[in-house]
Image (cartoon, rainbow, N blue to C red; front, side, top):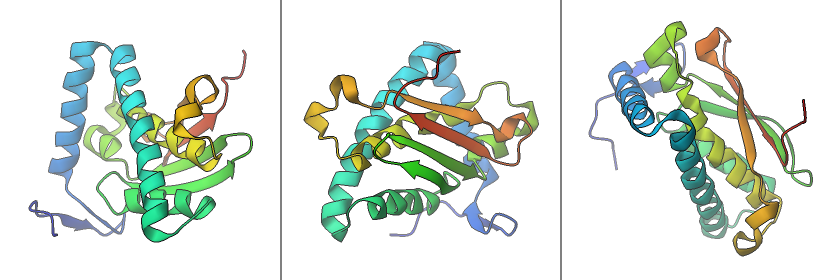
Length: 175
């Protein structure tokens, strides 16, 4: 099925992207975040994204007869085919439930540029934590306390970096 929205090709990014659509996504998230507060909104999005990513990995593994790292790679490739940006795996250690994911051409960064006051890319954190936990082989029913609970937008393109970088860890490092 072809999308009903007409996308222009961003030749530099090499992917379909509409700045209008990017602004639409960014504005929606900004309004919800302002209404609920950053911490509450981020928590809701984390939980929803975590659950959705685990479900997606499980179903797509069965559908495409994939396993292990191939499922994680397929998950990022699938996300990259959408208007969410281009995702690439920098590194992963499934046993330690740790990963680094790079995001180029985030619609949030493109919509708000360097003047971005709120890093909306935190929306992706639950997705990456859920997919990492799935890869670690942790059954959904047993995820509970042992689930990956941390994914941080370690580096943000809206803060002047050339890309966003997310770090998934089983625990936050103590300062």
